[in-house]
Length: 466
Image (tube, rainbow, N blue to C red; front, side):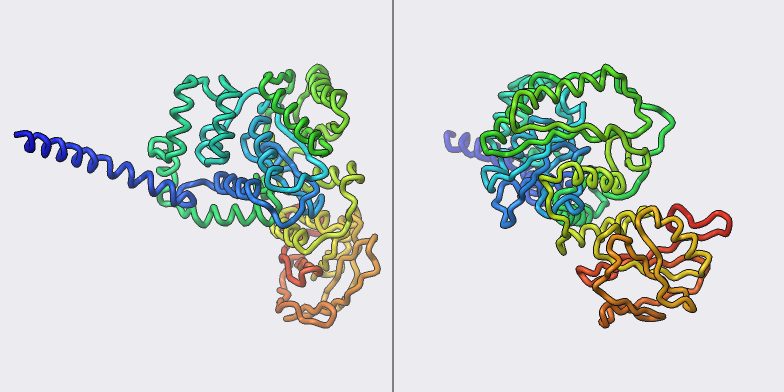
């Protein structure tokens, strides 16, 4: 009888174990196939983690810490080859401190750190559970440290005990915490999307948010009337600055601009300036800048995040106002590849010439004389002139007025483009009513992109590419 009872207990345990097999199977899948159900933001968060938790062969003199507005704004390829943008979507000064501290534990300290956070991330931690914990962003000790130190900001809905339980569930990849992600990923090729997003982050030295030229359109003017910061976020900003001071790092607090349809009260502007200026007065290694309050709406993807054109304008501004930080005006091959990518995505005709600037590009144009005259009258505002290569064929080359002495020769025709006597790539000029534009990266010896733009007599060239 005893053995029979024991056998029944064993059977019961076995049956219970069988019931839980699907749960553990899903858990095992979740723990080993993240790229199949993560979204691109989570994939880039994991890339960010891999950078900070490992020693980097390259030394970065400048690090950027901030939220998604910061990630979208700083373009290392424009500012400096030794800048790394470690900003992360949805984070506050709390997570920002741990990201920087983690990087410093594994890498040599940079000379300068730029800090940029939106107002909202001084009042709440928007993606701590859904992104930071779900992505296993921090070590166990740092994760528990956040729960213990931040308290109500992350335990509001569950209490402290519930927060610890949630931490364990996320750590074990418990299905209930990931079912929404898993369900949303069904029928989608998340692997390809995530790999592409990570490639963008690598190419652009950490910038991955709102890459592209989507333009913000609104009929509402957002009002900025009040600025306030919760104590915990102020404390962690203070801790970040103290960490930098201990390591001999200069801190530059820069507020990201907002769309120019924003309405800011004098009281709001004064409150923001007083808040950040208090850190300048408290520490000798801190500077603060908010001279660029706004940018045109078309430079934004939404009311918070700069698009490519906006990021380019902001990054050019940063490079200009910090000449003592960014002393190198040359562009590495890696920087040029990243700028190539931005040029290829460009949708605005004149914005393309703005991106080319004084960099080592050849821009070839095929059009008739009237079109050439109209184009030159526009690009002259960006320091560009048109040089005729073959008037009969309507072939022109744009030249920046500041780099008139080009160290390369150009020869092109129907079916070929030669730079310095070497055929770069076959390219056939098409015969149509559009202006053809061909951009060549001389540093990396590659055709970057081809664009077409309408020209209408009386109206001139189109603002956007065809």
